[in-house]
Length: 343
Ligand code: MEV
Image (tube, rainbow, N blue to C red; front, top):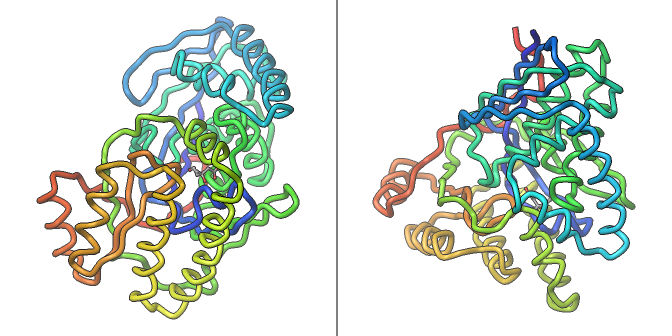
């Protein structure tokens, strides 16, 4: 039996814009996804999910499904419309597990059955990177179980390929943060990811940020990314470019511990993301209220609900405000360690 884990993630800034080649800053979070894997005597894949569902597939069914989705992805890519892929998961949420494990077994050339147990503190579909953390932790666990000895770079590369089958054309920022952990600068340059740790430059802790659960998004990450892709280019581009500039401003502000600028960046990013159509009523309400007490807040990840990142120098006041609005705080420190084998 092997147990591996990967952290969840938050975007401090740059979601959506990162899909168009702009830079983003992300942090791994203390809420982790644990995956336990062992070989089984039959030729089945059994998955006990973190929400206590027991799924059972045959190895061949999973591998065949992964092959089919890879072909479907190529077709979608030609049309730059990933709706068909995204619908696979709308139709049946179990397909996330089927394709994830199927893809790994296919890559490793494994025909034996496996038993997988997932335990996760990352809320599913919330913008905190559950799908990426699950892929990364599963690759790490299965690579160890079958003696593949993958480097973190190879784990990250495979996780990105699974993320594409889940979401269409993601940036790769989520899986990179879940693999490498810490505080990252991420940008896709000419299709290649540039991933740099910011830990040397920004050494202080981020104790005063608050992560708020605003409720499950109605749309999936893939759908929200597609929604932005469907906007008119001359409307989308200036907003995406501005988000890129805000990432540079955020880096400087974090380095200088200039928290007034950090708040400005959060609020302006939220405004831009709202204009891109990925905010919702709860997110707007929290944003207005946090700004009302002089704080900063922005949605995190794909949006449409999910988590929100808030900051105010008086954290107690901020927490009281959020709770009075009826929302839950997720306790998770920022800057946590990347994927690892447990014990
Ligand atoms: C999803 O967590 C973040 C998005 O920017 C998509 C991506 O980066 O692939 C919305």
